[in-house]
Length: 516
Image (tube, rainbow, N blue to C red; front, side, top):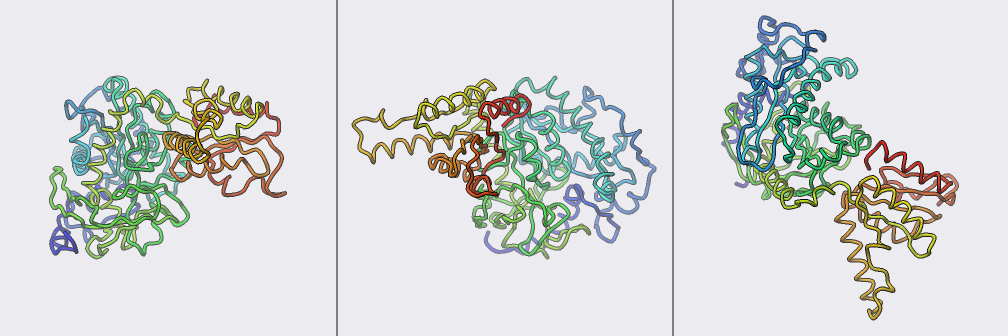
């Protein structure tokens, strides 16, 4: 339906009741009775001030290990038979009590916990077998603390998540494909799982995707952990789908501050640049309640585009007055609490699509994340020998490398073809291999590196590939600038040493301890 409908205003009251405690994930805010229409769901000032149910948790009390062999410690445990993939779903913040971490003896809060999961389960349940552990999540009051003090309580929460995930891997997964998903604090926990577990190639190769919605996938995370790979399209595998929603005039929030850049993908056109997605691409905004039922659904509710400066999702065609933030810490126009609801049907379709692609990839998935295109000059015997030496190291560490001098077409092999035909054949083959790759590794020797390698690096970067360079040459573009910024800026890391053999050794040492 085009245009805002009057029914959107009529559902606001229902939205307040059914999504506010899900929305409060990770928010530094105290809710009073005057702010909320239903104290039992949102955690009123009465509930937050009471310690009769859960009491105040200190760090020592929170360190008790949870027995995840007991199914009572799971909100979902193996729900959904005959599904192609497993879902490990992590709940957002629902604990509004006067404590730092949720008590797992608090049945009232656990009911809210399950309700919050139910609100987003419809995105995943048709395609996955679902697991969701109860955990001692960080309570709302934790977000009143500074980041250093807060982290100890986040670690308590994550300790449970890690224990649950480890139990799931050892006893339930049996090599099945995995989707990680979480909203807000739940998304934060997804990143932590990626950091701890998925640097392991064997496990990473089971990862279909990570839906970390409502918490930023920052440049710092991606630089530090190569296994955290932002999604670049609607169908890439093993990547992180992340976004947080705002009105066009919002300039910063505590979730996505002005000085933090996030990797975001547009859930309507599945692009990562600022290309606007028209509302006609929105297959259905769904507003859900604690049972999981859809209270209201609107086709073509809103469009969106990515703010390239901060990497947030700017939502168009709606008014903040119709979709208020409801959270004191968030400005008007911060649509955080509606993040996945605005794009519910598109996300639901995308989950099924990525699982289908994962299944269709078959044995090729074993190499997913590991395919390298090697971009380097190959016009002399010395160049080709050096290229092969580097490739041997990469392949010895489990990478599948396309080396043009070995695996592609060289001009002399195309005897009988015209110059234009040779050019077209070589160009198309190399471009195809770049697009099939996960990584481009480029030799950047020379005052100006090889033109072909630079073009290959540019194609790779523009298509979201991870790019690495290596250089053993003292020549530079300027006295105080080793490489042209447009070349260096494409690369996650550049290996540099004037001693070519030392460079080879440093690369080998790096690969012993890190993934590209």
